[in-house]
Length: 325
Image (cartoon, rainbow, N blue to C red; front, side, top):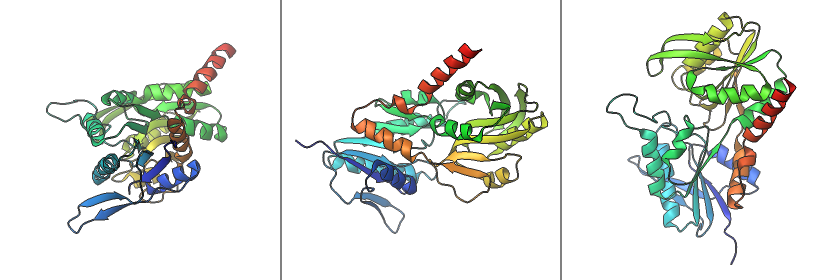
């Protein structure tokens, strides 16, 4: 019996990324289409046989929610077309910020989305930098949680910045930032913020010293860029020499592009998990395509994907740093 082959398909949300992933994998993107009706309803269609094969469906679920619905329907269509194994490759997992009840009578939307993906027929989820890593526990199927540090760290190393200090724009990102700071043997500071409501900051303070430091802010999501730009301004006010930011997912809604362009940030480095809506001189995009293509190959060949994470390198670098001290 022939081994099941890999077929990579894409929804409309991340078509360019999916094509790049397929290119790194060494094959063309699978033939599919999204048929649209006059009332706005749509229907995903696979234009080639997928029976018995490993099917990887690439689609980020950022706004509008049509992107999520499109992915769910693609999974359902693949299941009904007798795909052997279905992996939803979700570079940006939307609704991840709704991971708990932070006030009465609200939905835990990220758990709902996890249920929907599973019921639709996904056998596996592959994603990057969930807003909260514990969201993996919302799934009863395997989750491959890719780490953007594997992309950001080599870029930071090439910058050869002196007096390097890493900053977390809020308390929630401290673990992520601490690991990267440890990798470089650098200090870390925290920008502690208090919110009145979503996307609106009431107060912010810096915990730590940034005097004469070149600061690198690290976060998973950049939405309105309000937190990021205010953190950068405050760090400069506290004596930092420069501030640049690294954010995995460029949601960039509202006045985000304007906020970034007018900010004190040297640059904002993001991944291509969400396509940019417009150009901005201060925004640099790094590709995740090669990382996802290797992960897809390892899943197909039943190999570990642990080697793709920076954590094993982090642990070794941290150990060497401690010995040097």
